[in-house]
Length: 228
Image (cartoon, rainbow, N blue to C red; front, side, top):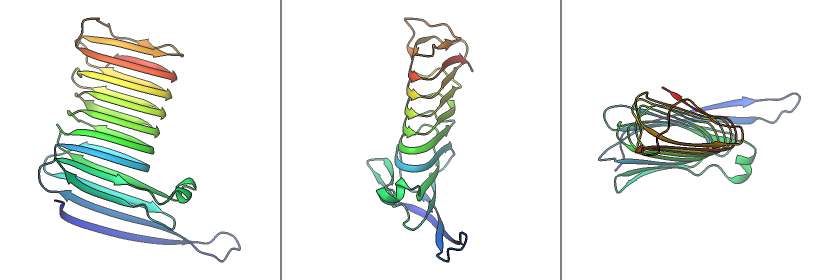
């Protein structure tokens, strides 16, 4: 069940270009809500925009900022089996191709929540999460800081930067085009497998028997593993 206060603001701006007397409507729709009940996982599927996930006490809190020209993106949220599903269905293929809509998510979650994010064109930022993290972007940077849990990051185009405050059970990064940087605590034992055409720079020792595995693969882009 979704509960809490919902607030909406709508802003319309008329733009006139040159001698053209036709008006172009640009709109902003801001929605905020709390999620009542027990939530153990977050599953966010998005299109264009951005995703920012931070840690906070209390219920899961979501802020959706939708920007559009004409047709607004269609978003929805529901809880099923303890998982909060956030879905952005966009505003139609033609409008999306012309960059006419995007959704920017800000989500506050408990520290131990398991988080899955899959977006087309959006940057993803995650801060202080201890739960399992799985992020996929077609185009968009992935940045995590204060992490401690198992992490998987996949992007076709975009930089990946992951910073850990404790040795994670496993880190897996696949990056076709873009730089990958992983910062791990000194003193931990890691089994590191880093492969890239540009040549990886691994500044931490790798142990074949370590339980913490770090697997980093990039087609085009530098890979750096360094002390946190």
